[in-house]
Length: 261
Image (cartoon, rainbow, N blue to C red; front, side, top):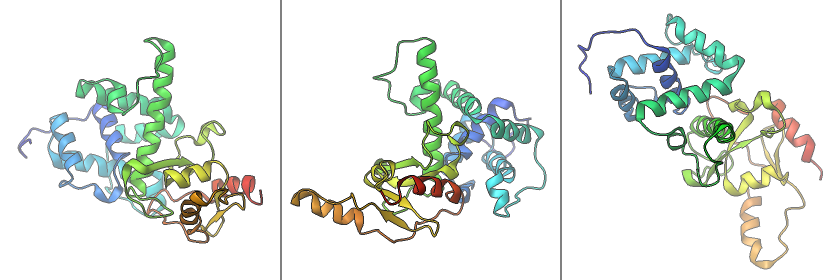
């Protein structure tokens, strides 16, 4: 870890992108010098831990979601941060991919590795492969941002086993390109409730309560315990995160499609 006496130097676009990548993966409340991930990033960038923590705080002050919550953060920040946010809000997908590539280069690893993308079914090297990787990098970004916003807990059951959690799109990825990476278009769900939500067997009403379709009834006695557990959360309110709460318009759009079927 670097000494506090390390000479100050200006942040580059590459470094700011890498910082933005981490900002997108950790809960706002964990931006602290004691956070191991911030310490690791400081080591990677050859910077003081306090400087990296401050950079994340400056990124937070320009985050529209945090601003809507009344969080202002630092009064001043670098122009590069503002430019990056402007670019992200206008066209997020290319910027997310650039940030992942910058981080991968620093780590001396492939983009697929740092984004935790399965490679078994990827096309051979070439344009087609890069196009698929770009999509999966952005899907990985969405997953990390949504799960971190919910503090890695299912918003229906409270389950906190990360391997069983899914970042569910409220409005499907293929249905609305503009909202693909919007964390307010996501819910952190366990794999079973995610499947029910995706198939229209579950939806969320305007009062943020969970509802299930009458189609969700077991056909075999062995399925009854599982279905009983799934349905036991009917009428329960969502466990909402402090930031990136689901957009009511997206929830209504989903519910309108499946309600009453």
